[in-house]
Image (cartoon, rainbow, N blue to C red; front, side, top):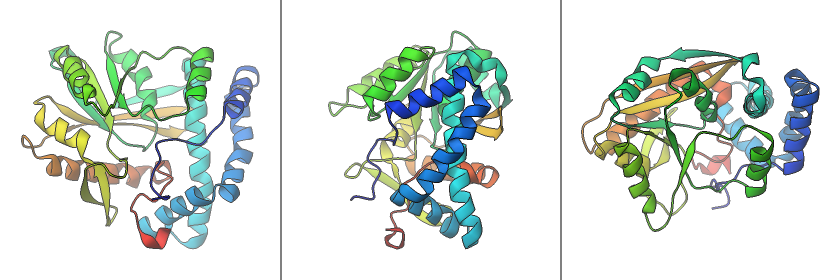
Length: 295
């Protein structure tokens, strides 16, 4: 149980304040310089997450021991860069970055038709940056992010106080299932609803499927809803390609009505394809495959 994802990411308000100071006063590259030492710290002192991400490189991608060790550091570093980049863009430095669209016609089609749609992403790359891509497509577009709201409230409050307020609306998952009605209401207004499909809480329903050669568990909820709501489904990711360049991918998912298992299979195939292109941007730092050998 201790190896399951708990719904929270590591980090402190002080840490974010330091990075925001560097970004605003010394620039993004200076913040990257500080990040080098933070990533190195995590390699040695974030025991469990380091062990699990090493397991991903060594057992799932079949890297050598040396390459796996080096990749652990690189993974932490790239992850930190995406957080810095998001803070920089939200602080008004959007023009310092470049953006590339791949499959954007799938999103434009949803917006033009006004039928609503479901976007399913993963903790691969940084989907939270998608908001800034959507501004380029249609300033009227509405994104609803379904979340457990389990992140640290003090960090969220601080970031909201020093950065541009997000246009993304949040739908909180509740025990009373009220989020189902909010999702339906958003879709009926032609809005887009986004889920992440790669994390579930112990004790909730899940669907098992193969990913990178091993069975893993995926939350059933997003896939059951997406397969039954009769709206288009897209797999969407925002990947960091170079120091200040991001690439948005949007792929249409075709699946029979009610076939949640089939949708999960298409999803895992798509995630595996993304990881073949961006292996360092797998940001699930826990025992994802729930293997005893990784504990």
